[in-house]
Length: 254
Image 1 (tube, one colour):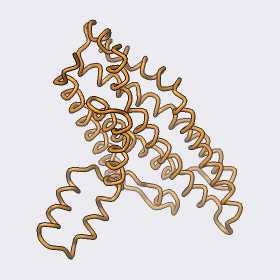
Image 2 (tube, helix red, strand yellow; image 1 turned 30 degrees about the vertical axis):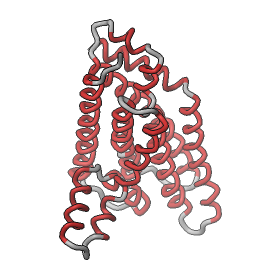
Image 3 (tube, one colour; image 1 turned 60 degrees about the horizontal axis):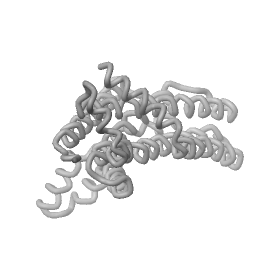
């Protein structure tokens, strides 16, 4: 456990120092600022515009940060040969992968808190009142980002950052459209339906983490649904991290 925490703290410091971290953070805050400008051009419910664009901006920024930072975490250490120094200590490859993931999640949680603070300030300034739905929509961004971070970490164990980023973006888009894929194949043949169903069950359904509409229209939320989504995201991310540990353990690096 000490080894995992050591790698996690080092990953947190490394992530915060990266310029990409700040660029995406600025992007997220910029999206919130844009929502304020657009809200002034709307009539009747400006805070709904702030909620829609603001929550979308937070989700997009966190997901981009999780994916683009994770795809280089392990590869850089292998490429620079610094991983070999770490593995001379009482630290297994699987523990190293877990530490990397935990450190990245620390960083994402810190960024999420910052985005949430800005979001609530902007929402209050637009005449809105923070609600439970807002909090749930913001919290639900984390398990979604965790899945992308875990998938990027898995790719980083055997691929270059550029290729991994491309594959990760494809994974993200495919996971966000699994529900639409099933709907589009309802009138197809049996094989097409089975294939769509297979993709639906294998890939994570990112639409499950979208509570933005409930926040915008103040819809009631079920505690069971929210808890299931959080558990679903956590288990899927944990499975990907375990797979990444297996891949790195079996990889020949000499």
